[in-house]
Image: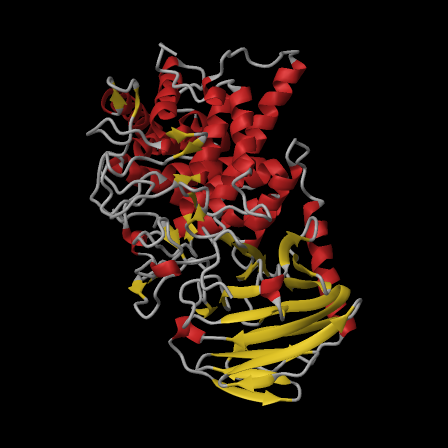
Amino acid sequence: MDRYPPIAAHGLVGDLQTVALVSDHGIVDWFAAPRFDSPSIFAALLDHDRGGWFRLAPEDSGQGTWRQLYYPGSALLVTRFMSPDGVGEVIDGMVPNPSSRATDRHTLVRVARAVRGTVSFTLDCRPRFDYARAEHTLDLGPGGATFQSPHLTAHLCSTFPLQRDGRDVRGEVTLREGQVAGALFTVCRAGGPAPPQPTEDELARELWGMVGFWHRWLLTSRYRGRWPDMVHRSAITLKLLTYAPTGAPVAAATMGLPEQVGGERNWDYRYTWVRDGALSVRALVDLGFVEEAVAFVRWLGHRLHEQGGPGSEPLQIMYRVDGDPRLTEEILDHFEGYRGSSPVRAGNAAADQLQLDIYGEALYALAESRQLGMHVGYDEWTALARTLDWLADSWDRPDEGIWETRGGRQDFTYSRVMCWAAFDSGLRLADEWRRPADVHRWTAARDAILAQVMERGWSKTEQALVQHYDGDVLDASLLLVPRVGFLPSLGPGWLSTLDAIDRKLVSDSLVYRYDPAASPDGLRGSEGTFSLCTFLYVDALARTGRLDQARYTFEKMHTYANHVGLFAEEIGPDGAQLGNFPQAFTHLSLIMAASTLDDALDRRRQDGGGPEREEPAPWLTGRNPADRSL
């Protein structure tokens, strides 16, 4: 067993309230329950020795070849093992629970199967409750094993015998071609009853039921573009990362996975960011997943309605999936961290930061709700208007910015741009919905922001919009400028900014969010390219008509996906995936880029246009476009 497999060496399974990661060697090394943001039960990714894991795999797994895939169009994960003696499969899934009611009972279904020859499988189940801080007892009987911790009970039922291994269990079964064995790992509240011991037929029905759920869900997709496999895999991933009872998506399935191996940039992403969720609305609507978009808009509306008294900040940048604003950050110093990457943090102190851009994204989402047929009542509109009135007094303040830097507040250009977008959206909504609004004040704020950004956020040196007012550092968040309409996509100001980002932040089509050396962010170490930013780059290229470059960049980015089409937050210098995994924002931006690029390519084809004439193409040859001597 590899102590720390590559971050990308995993597939994701889930039941719409929590998820598990399964490595390509059949090991569940991350699982938290009963919710995404609950303490872990298996966390070997963060500490191999202490974290706990659940292995179901062929006995001689080091001697064969491994492959992993999803059953087409579903979240059912198949891990295959091939050796001279036989071919085996382990099929993993969780029964989807799309109910609006939260449940404390969650079951991981694991099925072993011999496809050819004879395969001996070994099961090792080693749970470690509450981030491995809580002790548990083991009760082993003929019906299976029960692990009892102070707050949770876990039942392991299998179709083959289990033996005690200290406070853990182990089992072995040899299967001939066509034979099946399986196990159910069920987590519930302390003292909850065990499920009945499964039969092979019942396991088969569970698996096919999962497939049927995902196939029915994908039937509602209206995507007919050029990349259906990647887009639909991203859509399924976003669905898996959305908490069904509230409609709130988490930023990623995991916590503590490093942006630099061995470094300190290790965060807990199992919460709902207003920014990420708001931008997901447009992508979901484009794909036809209206129910999911409506659910998040309602969740966002509840957060606005809950805002405090006069003068208080209307929104927090992130919440727990049930809307709880308390995300106290703690250090799990008993965990060594992924390959020594420490500290391991649970909770997220950035929740207390001021990030003014979230109001632009929130209003953007509410503006998109017009296409969903949603109607805003008087109370909801009053909360929205009160938010913009607060923003009119607050937009001209330094903040921590979209990247949640811990090096002090700055006048971030992207924050100002999104404040502009907030007022622009609010004014359009007030007009279209015929609602009372301080139109004069909102208009004055919007126009003042535009003038300030173009005066103070524009670098004459770089001929571009820059990260903040006190420097010439480029920032990839500004790739969203044409999408929100702050600058026209074919205007000289935007084209010059895009050229500058090309020069300073793009490396073989991959995009850095900014240069930490040039703009210190209060943290040690470096980071990889941000996959989100690369897909935003594709979107921006497509909007400026650079379609061949956009398509080539998009296709190249697919080569960095893992073996089942999933992306973490970053790509390291060696091409390895870094950061929490899989990241919802990355898959969201993939969908956004695909939709924009598909539409632009369709228009070019309808207009009878041919490929762009760029010979030699700098983005293809690697030539620096600023170097005229080449």
